[in-house]
Image (cartoon, rainbow, N blue to C red):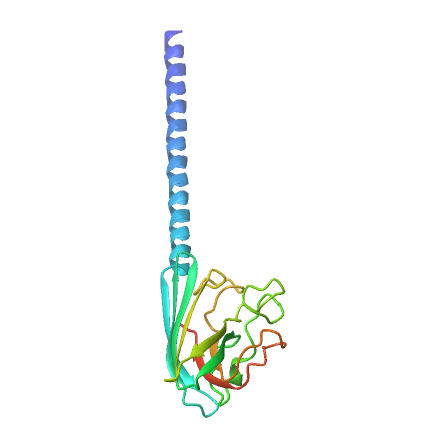
Length: 199
């Protein structure tokens, strides 16, 4: 009888020890999964934050335009800062267009305004709708120098969200003024500058 009890106790001890080992194995697996998920989250975060793209603007339609534009992403905001030279004094329009192609002499290879949400053209932030590329107008001074300073959380750099990602688009400078009303592009006139937004 004592032998039987000892065998029974030994069997129970082996069973309990085996269960504890399995639990520890599961905990290790859970920790590995959690570590993997955290790494993936960090990768996604690094793909969408603290990015910077500097693009060169090239002249189109026989203009004398030159300049650069810098897109900087931080804390969920994209900031556009551009310096544009060679335009006449006054107001000029600037938009993001749907295709990152500046190959044509008139800039029309960049396609129409970037409008992933299928809204009407309008002034940025208008309750009546606006394109994600409808940046608006900027002022050129008497020396032919214009500055653009614009920030939004509706863009991202390389996040692969088709409604936010500006990579693969083109920045277009127009000779005329965006009236924020005419469809589909604000009657902004000739495309005199183009730059591809790319990494």
